[in-house]
Image (tube, rainbow, N blue to C red; front, side, top):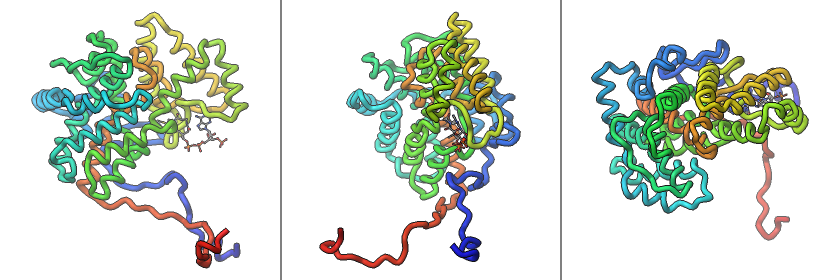
Length: 382
Ligand code: CMC
């Protein structure tokens, strides 16, 4: 390539790394200083002091709710948690071999089909759809798990929070206060995270003036990948493969020798510690102590240390999510759908923000394939 040609070559930001694609007032992911801020509040301010109900309201409406607003919001969420007979029948009809994320994606799509305003891109309509879908997702995920385990789905109980409802619907008994508090904090910590891949997918769909359900469906499909949300279940599989703290060092050496990745480590944006990880670690330890089973926590801390020694990699949000969710007796194949339960608030807020100040999302690609080829008729091609 000649010097002028090289100079004219456009700069390509593979994976859109470092590209700022929009302004937002929903959250700030400060990779340099390793901070996460929701609508102006550092997550350290919120976690343990607010509920997912308050944080989902904050993300959607821009301010923490006053008492009356929270009561109204909670009532709306409760009212939407019951799954309609056609949704239950659909979930029952799905093949056992399909993953919980594939089922959740299909169920959300079906919610859109049954919503008479399912194709609308009106802000008020999509606000109503956000409440409906945030509320229903915990019921959907717990129902998917019960059907998978050959158990009958349960109807939601009045007076329980999102987190308490999920644990009740999954286990068929009300969870204790620590379990509810841990899952609630998990939901708060994973509720929103800037222009991550799934949120970007949701905004891209909304950018075409499609509809709320299509945007959420695309987000679920994106979260499903192991480099994104499925890293939490892969991290648990990794802990199970290690099996005991004594095997950690050998596992690290083998993984490095095989050039494989440690799931729950590394981050595209954070250049240091993921600000959510310390909270999840503390919650996992609390649950482990309460259950008198620190095995998974011990393997995790040893692995965190060994990977740091070997490769200076920081853990990300998914690492201690794994032991936390495991201590809550949530089956590993359900972990990514748990992430979706939490992120539903952030996705919804981003869909609304995109719709309220829309610009079609349409990046460019730098073409590097062949040029000036001549057409060859079919019977002359080899
Ligand atoms: N294990 C081993 N090496 C790693 C890892 C890891 N988990 N993460 C990054 N690296 C290495 C990678 O091999 C590369 O090294 P080298 O330059 O020597 O080849 C270097 O770090 C940079 O990696 P990269 O893939 O270019 O970085 P990225 O910004 O594209 O990747 C990531 C970010 C999250 C995809 C990656 O860290 C990863 O694959 N992690 C494991 C999966 C995971 O935990 N995903 C959850 C992400 S955070 C929450 C979420 O979105 O759900």
